[in-house]
Image (cartoon, rainbow, N blue to C red):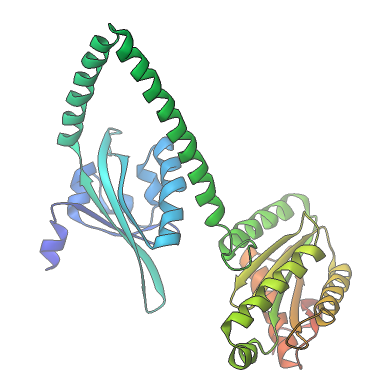
Length: 328
C-alpha cells in the first residue's frame, strides 16, 4: 500500500492548518522535480507564484474553514526550474486525535491546457468573424457587461469570505484566528516601540449550568448579549474576540498594569449588573501586561494562568499576573 500511495497517478501533499508541508509522495516530487528535503517542513506557498498565493489565500483558506474541503481549485505551482506547472487541486481537512491537517491532491493539467489554448484560438477566430457584423458586435458588448457584473460579484463574494473567515458566526465578534494574528502584531509592535499593551481573558462563570438549566438556545443568547456588552464597553482601537466556547479575549493597547486592572474591574461590574433575563451572570477575568521577557504565546499563557486563579479563588473576580508567583 505504501508503494501504491507513493506512486499514485496524482501528487499528494499533507499540510498543517498553518500550511507547512508534513508529507509528500513521489508523484508530486517528480511533477516539479523537487526533493523531499526541499519541501517537507516548508510552507506550501513556497512552490507558488505571488499571484497564485493570492488565489490560495482568498479561496482556499476561507473554504477550508467554512466547509472543511476545497474542490477543483485551478492554480499553477512552480517546478524547481521555475517553470509553471498547471494543476487541478483538491484539499480536505482532517482532525485525528486532536491533530489537525489538510490532505491535498494535485492533478497535472498539461494536456488540458493545450486543449484550452486550441479552444481559445478558435474562439478568437470566431470573434474576429463576428466583429464584421453589427449584430454580433452588440452581442459581444452584452456579454462583456455580463462578465464585468460576474467579476464584481466574485469580488464581493471573496470579500465576504474573508470577513467570514475572521468572524465568529454566533456573536459577530472577531474569532480566534483573527485574535491570534492581532496578538502577534501587537507583540511585534511592542518589541519595536516598548509601548505596552494588556491582554484580558474572561470566562463566563458556571456557563455549563446555564446550558443545563435553560438549554443551549438561551446559552447562545447569553453569549450574544455578552458580546454586545463588550462591543459597547471597549474602544474602537481595542481588539475584542470570542476565543472559543464561553471564553472571550480583549487586547487593550497602551495600557499599563494598574490601568488594565481598573478596566477589567469596571468590565466585571458592568457584566454583573447588566439586565440578564435568567438572573445574574458573572465572569472571571485574567489580565497580563506585556514585558520584555514575553513572547506572543507566553503573554497568552500568562493571562490564561491568571484566569485560572480567578476561577480557583471563587470566580467573579479579576486577577493580574503581577500578583502571581508562577510557582503554584
